[in-house]
Length: 520
Image (cartoon, rainbow, N blue to C red):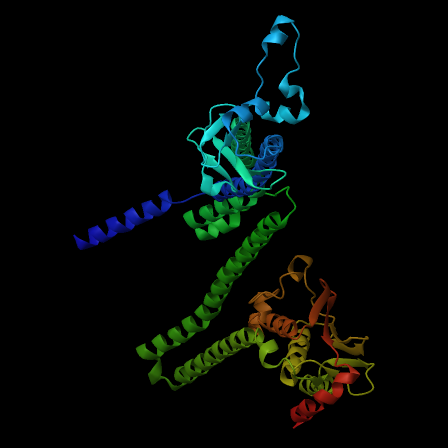
């Protein structure tokens, strides 16, 4: 029951994880929309505040003008302001003589100074020294406070903002305070304009955010299409048989020509390499199994023979032991070559600073083969007159030369001639080994460096070859940043050429101790 509960919880967690999955496109779109909206909000706030400041400053100027006009008209009096005097100065009543004569008296607000007093939503109120209201051009929306008669403030009456400014009225002659003047400006136009601006910014901001989000969604869908293709390919790889999937699944070509499309190409290249590795691995396992199956079967056959009756026959016993030892020797040689092949990949790490004299090693190996194979005619063309240092460990260089010359001897049938030449360029030393043997068919040239691959399998087995020599040589050369090439024609022979980096003259002083150590 606990196991079932655990499985259920795991499945529920998995389903929850799937439910919580959010596409990168959605995150990108929402994030971009929110980001643009946030920037627009900041910009709108700054712009809104700027417009509001300009509008408020304009409304304040109207209030200051009205307050200044009223104060200037009342400063001519020396005594405390009263209602009759203020009304006479700040209001206008049509006299009876003027009505009888039918004359049109000039309006008091035709004076430019009084135009501000008649402005809409603006109220001028006058107070005596006690703070009592003695005149008001309109209903006063804000009560006068004598204690704050020198202050300006913006208040909210519940419906609109109201700007209030007041000051003492001083007699022009005595400079004594004779009353107080207050201007209240109900900022209806200011509030309406602010509300319109706010509505415009909100609508435009939401529209811009949605538009940017949709545009980002389309753009992200196009830009992230390589990622979606990669996801599809990975799902197919994880869902199907690994070997078949790697051979068939590929990301389709992309038209973006950017980093993501390059990533898709690299992914395809990686799959190609993995396919090659899997094929080589399968081939390697098959070849190793095949190579080991024969000696194991031979040894088992001889052991069975001896176990049944052969141990009583000295001749059969001797032959069986000798054959078994030969097969064991073949297996030992195969295992050793496989170890050499695996170690060849680490030469750059372990022997990266080793140097050797390619001229000396080639001459020594050449002399050894002349002695071992007296029936062959060896020819040496040596253009290296002095010591020539290359960047390779001595034993590895000797192993490569032995592999090439041994193959030349093995695959030579009639014309037993081996040509060896030494030369160098500005940066590389070059060694060429040429034979006139069976040659390599054109279709096999590209595969001769594969593990266990043999052109003539029967002859190679007779000669004791396992098909690993050229693979070892190639891996060693790659480890030292060298290269090997082959030219061959079936029935005419083969030419193998290796190139190794030279030790430059300015580097020779640093490598002399290593070279001397190698000689010892």
